[in-house]
Length: 157
Image (cartoon, rainbow, N blue to C red; front, side, top):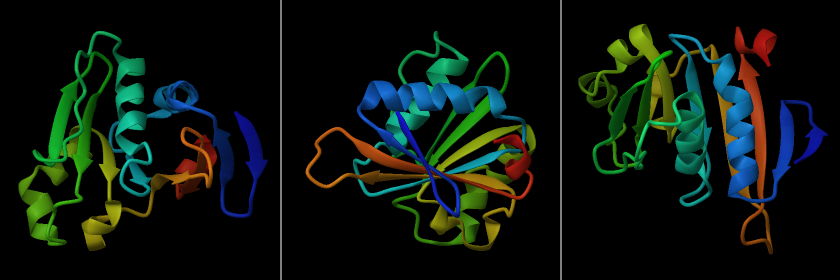
């Protein structure tokens, strides 16, 4: 991983999925109940791969960690903490829909990993860790990952 600083956060060049997993492993021990990690990026950029690696870091025996594209949310009750993995791509941009998926419970009882966080509207909290995963032109496997902490996260990363 190559580390570059920018004004809004820390930017890393991630060479492949193994490096993305190593990055997720660095974030995993920072997580606390009530945290929200907003995962941004185009389709296929690596948001679900990041979530999968983070979950396997916290519990190597977690088993299969599928993308919740069709179920919209998948909950992992891990030994240390519960992880709620939301994929809101198919959500109709209605805050009520996310509440029906257990958003309030997720915020109270675990960590929320949220793909397509813009669909949360006014429910997106001010304290969050945003991770942007972008394709690098002319590279099949490399990604540009920018980590932007907001609120209480500024002190933690």
